[in-house]
Image (cartoon, rainbow over all chains, first blue to last red; front, side, top):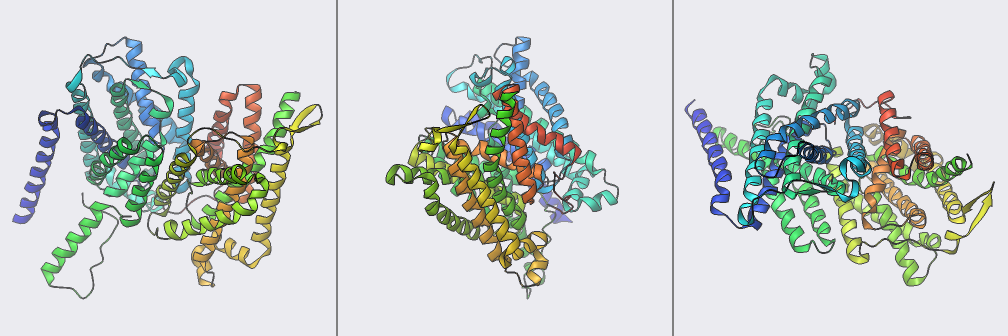
Length: 343
Length: 291
């Protein structure tokens, strides 16, 4: 009993320390290049966590989340332009509107895409992403098409420019984590995990699978849309092929798989490891397309070496060690259930 | 009216190429239950191989297939053994990541070797044309269509007239049962992947003669090919062929009737409409298994 309490205290202490570290980062690191990397890393922490709510908990792998990311950015830009909002702190207030609009889009896409399962679902989400990209390109009167959409320019300059965006991204990442944590502990989350393990059985025992899946899809998409909105404001100019980039959609999936699919902290870990690595590769080899070859190598290494992700693998290791300590060395390695991992 | 008729004819002719490429993709899915997101990149790689042979040795693109198809077959077998075979759990999701990485690798390598300028495969029959019912059809479309038809015929002969084909079809129906009756499913998978990649090489030549392409062209291709195989029903060759021709006709007609910028959109819209009515696609069976 005592050790359980200690573990909980340690977990909370680690969490508080992590958040404190995140919040104070711009205070002791003012180099814009570093803060820029931090902005994108924290952005991917949020994106991967939000994606995991759908992909990790229900097992429905969406490769089209880039559509929600870009849609959120476009929706935000259009709302700001329509209301005539000036650059500064004020635009951040309107981010939830972009999120709400993205949720509506997710409702439509999800209603159609979730009629399919498994591999078909994966492909349908890819097709949906290209549809949204085509719309952004073709509706020139609304989005500006290939010439892009501009955002109000914030009045901040120099070293300080990245800092407000860093905090906005950090806030979104924490919101995503809090929602992910809450879902995992709720009855709703339990239903999602049941759908992942066996959808037909889950239906049979009374889980409203379709409503649950659609809800998870909309929550996940809404968070991604809001992060996309902040991204659009940060880069101040968005184009269809960069705002709705298949590489963004697949990168965050890889991060979740690296950290651990369906775990709370896996996506965070995956993003913190992979995003700085990807940015480093892009900065150093971005001139030629060769950096894509390095990306590919990272992808393949991650999947072939750690197909189950870091968090579940480490969790198994810890369990095996503690089990050995408790009952002495076992004859055979204890088999662990891979289905549900503790966060 | 003539314009629409012309669009339909071109839809059928270009649909043949997509039918071949999509057949390779759906065959790979049927045998291994994996989505090969790298298929578009492999098509582009095939086109660049023929491009390199054309430029360095002046070999006709169609003739160069004698060299590139076996080479691509071997590449496919190697890719399957090294990257696909090790995947055990979560095959569908992990296969997407792995094959996407293959696509990125190919794109990066081609960009490094050939830059990202657009190129096209040239031959005398690319511009020469003949007249039918008052409109002109370039020879390349007919030759390409003929080649794709011939290769599709070969695939069907292999699948339905050989022992190996029976093994492939058995694996597609039930992998475990096939294994139990003595089919070496690992070998079948590797060869099926090789066949799929070899057809990508042939598709690449026809695609490269009728379109300008660069290393990034694979995104456009793969989004269409995936849409086609879902529309046809995953793992169904017949479905893929019908869906490819149908999609391309609709795309070309939309380009004429409405506007070329909406052509691709009509393509995806058709998928949405079909999914609402028939989630399993035209010839698909309803997926009841877990991910």
